[in-house]
Image (cartoon, rainbow, N blue to C red):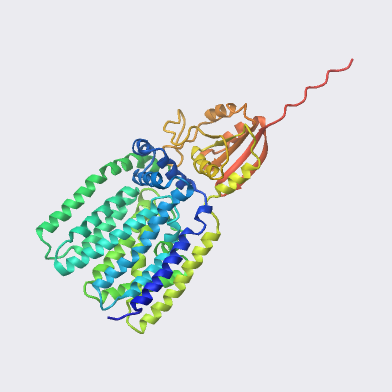
Length: 521
């Protein structure tokens, strides 16, 4: 067996990599407030299971499974910022740990080519990959999806090895495969894209002459059960999609597409993109030289490429759905292929691929450090701190659109403040905006209101000393600043905060003009 590292040295390296991966994911995670999408997750989970399964499907295109998972998690660990973030961190760290059995399963299938060096290379890439680090810090489905995709990859590799050696479908790994397939369908509205990739990868690795009729019956029956279990989620998607398609704020463009794909499969930048391409080609070449290695190469390519390709195709033909964070699970098979490219070539070419690994890993680490130093995605703590120095008893914060109240209220909670917040027209979700209201960004829970309605709401604030108007995406929800102009007719501005999409404008009652003195005869 060709070895790069002895077992003891590999274990020591893996421990060091694990420490680096933990630090990258945990560092400053409690200093960053929940941003808008994370606040949606926390808010829905806090409402309870009845709300999750009866109300969320009325305004969300995503199935309620992930929010239910957050609900269960917070019942155990609390709904503090740390409790909420710990689910993603745990999923991210477990996914990082799974790189070792994934690498060992590949090495088990090809013992004359890969050893512990594959586990070290894959763990290093996964520990530092910017997309994997960033998603582990999110209160969103993506870290759980990455974990499930890792489990599915391990199950597929095991199924392929057993099918090659014994001409059968292994029951245990097949059950894990089906559960993972079902979870991917229920975790996100783009789950079907991953389901297509998973099914094709199964065929690439497992389908072959010699499988029994019972194996094929099990294959068809298992997939039928998964499809039936997915029907409720499909119904939610079918009901919500038309509104989202016609009103989405997203705009698809091929601008910077190479950068976005590089971020998904390795890391952005000229050097890491070139390094990733070299290692991917080396990985494919290494696998193609091995008996049935083409099956592994094809499966990894399908898992890494099909969801992205389908997402881009939908964005061009139907509506924009391609967002980098929704595609981050594809990094798992992509990094696996890159790690094979590091250790797969024979000497002396292996010196070249090891040399290529160094700048890629360094670039990943540099991006991670830059991202941690760059501050939060949305600076809600800065917003609340600015307001705390100015708000007075009796003042109110008006959030229009209503979704802006979600991350604002969580930041207020974390800062232990007392603030009266009014979401306009109602707290999330507003399921009926009234005559003339519309959904400008695809969510049925967020409405823009007609001018007459906004004028009436402005008059309701006559007794409030200062209204702090919180706006998030004013260009989409309040074109022409109708609510702002309506409120400020009898008020004067007393402060303004702007940070990215977050904006607060303070409007205080103008003092009444003194009555004219009576004329002296």
